[in-house]
Image 1 (spheres, rainbow, N blue to C red):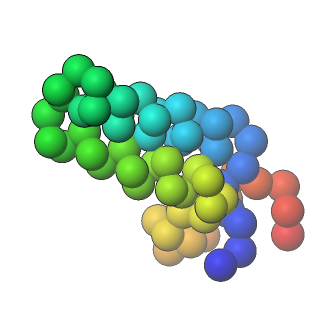
Image 2 (cartoon, one colour; image 1 turned 90 degrees about the horizontal axis):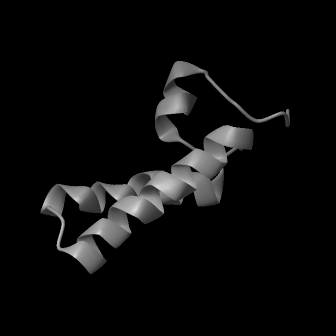
Length: 62
């Protein structure tokens, strides 16, 4: 797995993921908000499978 997520994309993924998970845990949000685990994981691991399939990357590493 080569890194393909970086910069502002990484920060946004982590923030959105945490916000969705917090919504479920703290405010009783809908069950679909658990989808926040996916952007959180891709932000923390710097790898997005969809980006890999599409040949897209937002990080500066080769």
